[in-house]
Length: 417
Image 1 (cartoon, rainbow, N blue to C red):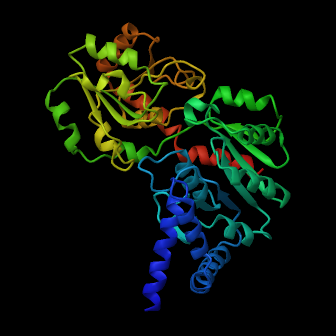
Image 2 (spheres, rainbow, N blue to C red):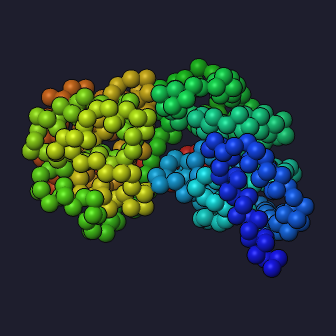
């Protein structure tokens, strides 16, 4: 009976935690807040979690520790930099705690997810238990908009923690879809200038130059990367959503990711209308409501596929003949290191992009001018490169030079100096 009650209490707490920021009436949230601190709950749950954490820390007593302020949950459909870098830093010998916001993970406590890496929703508990640990880092991203994390960072610096700060995108309302809070801008400036307590990673040249204006040391350029094997060792199956487009036997020009304001809808619409001999596949979601207004979905040679889980994504992308990144050139994309760029390389597919600075760095990428005529020309070049052994070797070489493992090695060297 006690066991069932404890299970029920845990489910209720998780439900409260996962709905707290989703517009649930405050009276309900407050009831959950009180319940989670009920003596019954604390008596039977908290000591067990404390013991679990104590065992983890004792087993890894010699390892430096990284406690993340993760932006996204672990089980989000698309893995992002936060998960990849966390996994690889753990493999570099750090004990890594990935703090979930618990919108999708539905967990309480500590769950081992990979070597030296634990998923937790107990940030404050971990923080308190690491008071006497010498090598300890808070890992935070520039796009973090949580006000309570801002206060936690200030406290951590006073308590002797080092901050690993990743400047991963232009801090922009276009990306965040919300007005940027002033405390986010203030924190950004403060951390860039704090050479003593903060290590800064920039993911693009433009961002790196911004950082260099504020400091002389403890910063590094580390672009995005790829798990090479995930996009290379692929089972040859045809997903149901791809059957209609593959059956037409036309060349498939593919893209996956966010469909947002920085995507060049006008160019893709013109491409679809003028090149009926091509099929265009867009895998992703309407990030900011801009896609549905374009009318692209109605075009008969455009196939729109809902977001695909990261683990299954290669099954879909392997059917592309040419991979594309048709972004507009603006303040957002001038600072963008597209994760998909390196994943496309690992797929071994020809790549066509607009002239984004971070794409122009690589010999394997066919860079088109920002107009449909040149974009279509580069697609033709890409189609001609299919099966070209020399080109495929170049794609493989550049993919292997940009694995997440190599990115984490660089970060580890920086913070371990």
